Image 1 (spheres, rainbow, N blue to C red):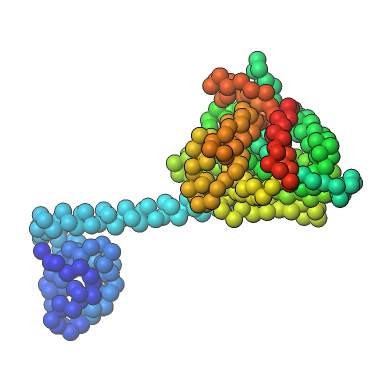
Image 2: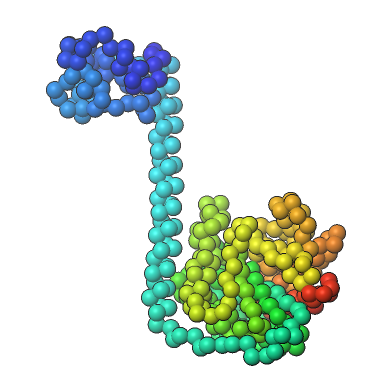
Length: 394
């Protein structure tokens, strides 16, 4: 059994010049060469080191034929090592190619969707120009609208709730009217829109795909246009509008949550679509400094607010998670995902759970989670810690 680990070390063990080896010696060298780990075997380089006139493939076949016809067998311990090393190296190569193909496949899917949606978006009419017309000089409050769980694509009709694309439009229109009314009544100077995710139904569950009215490309395009129109019109609510968003679970590009990468999100295409449609608006689009799935801002009386979709952060553990992440105190946390509005206090940190626009669909109905569709509007005073927590019923 040889203990040489690399091809170069093996070549250094040769005691003759290229072209001086007999046929028998060439075959014996080839047999010993088989004991090298597979990643160090280079038949072309070995052929050149021996000064052979035949091709590397011809030489390799001669060695294989010699091993087969001569009855030569590698020592048992060497066979095990070679088999193990070969298997490990081959598996590494297979894993690398599988990961590479998966990355290319998902990247291609995202790019194809972008192209398809761009072609469709080119046919949309230009959004009308909208401006804030109230007196902005007396605004003394700012507001945060939690926008989540639109689930475009799903259709449900159960005892507790009905939902489809037309109803989604109606509920967004109701939300728009209410937000504008509350904002003007409270003299809002800045309205922060937090897109907490699940704007589409996606493809993550088999039952979700069965319920879907449309495929993912249509869901993205329609959700993008509905949100673009909503954001465009909501410019009537305040002199300054900001928009932020986070990753979610229904927008995963890969259905299997064990295989997906968090940043591979259809929600990124929705945001890209919205920014393209509202490029000429006065809305300020703000990227998250922390992560695509976690965002933060300072509101009201300089209070720290953090937000996420909620699929990675439980309502009872989010405060500990976010303080541990930032090493900074968090005054407010905003989550979605649970489809049921709630507010909880933890050691002075207030956690707001948003409702949903979709309401109780089949998954929630099966879990006996009954709740009316709603969205939260939070109004913060700039002069005190007073908060108005408004659940807008849809």
